[in-house]
Length: 413
Image 1 (cartoon, rainbow, N blue to C red):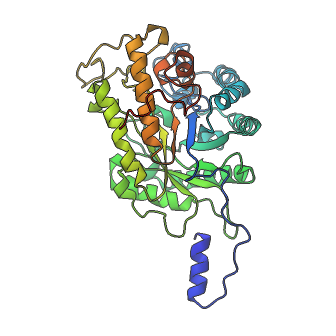
Image 2: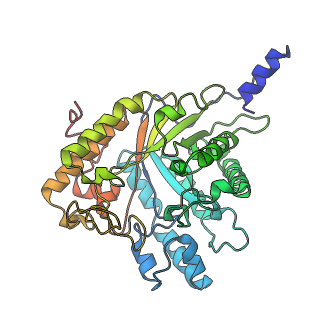
């Protein structure tokens, strides 16, 4: 039970309530200062589209996620590849560059298997040391680190970014899965609670599949309550960043608002995983601008925790290894919109018109998302998908060196 609720209950019973020793003091001024950040995708949780070479080099087309990466390879071989990847994909110099780009937050996806591997689970561990390095590096450059549990036992969404790609997620249907996840979140909080100035926020679970119905949503809502970062008698300064489970703002109205300090809503806004992939440039910008009024009306702090200046799903394997794209009709069941040539891959193939559009689209989203409490772009870097890469955007000019330096400040007017 949250501390404030306990005190209220004591007061109703006529018992004197002793004020808590600590008041809620998050390590960032959420609500008054805007979150401007980027995610470290593909580092401690593999994603085939972010680092396709890791998967191609296995020579095995059945290796489609981190689960099968461990399942279908010799352990020592797989471990050596991962160790090299962890050492090289993100280093302290990336944190230095992120800070130099005027950002204040870094989101770090990590899987449950970094903390616990169950019987029969083929995951390879070793990520925890890198999470601890990330905390140190963030502190060194004055950045705030959001630790996001990206994969849960049984998979919460069936996507490869949960660690295990499957046709239907099983996390919610097995209470042991949920209990394990809750225990892991408490472990993470125990590691970072004293580091709240650097790690002000924990995301208890990335993108649970609320679109699969009430059976999922009821489990998710209970899990949000259970993972609320308060001990039995002590108060935490850690913010809980709960994902909207792909539900509308109205679904969450009033949720965890009374008696809960430090709860924020994470919403992810993409325009390429639906019919919106067929929008022209002006329609993409108009849709981005339209989000602002909705974000401004949330009753919790709201952060757009994933978004991108990419407007297509042309990045190789974005929809999963061996799966095509909606945009060029190569994905089963999709219709041709246009050619993917010059829409993803290396930015040297991008036209000046396309880069101008990405700058406008990036700015429209930033302006709109700052009607809420800010944003965290997905993702910092990718091997061969520069349209998604913050690092490439800085290099090629569709992302400004200072995120407040807008060329199109009136684009949403």
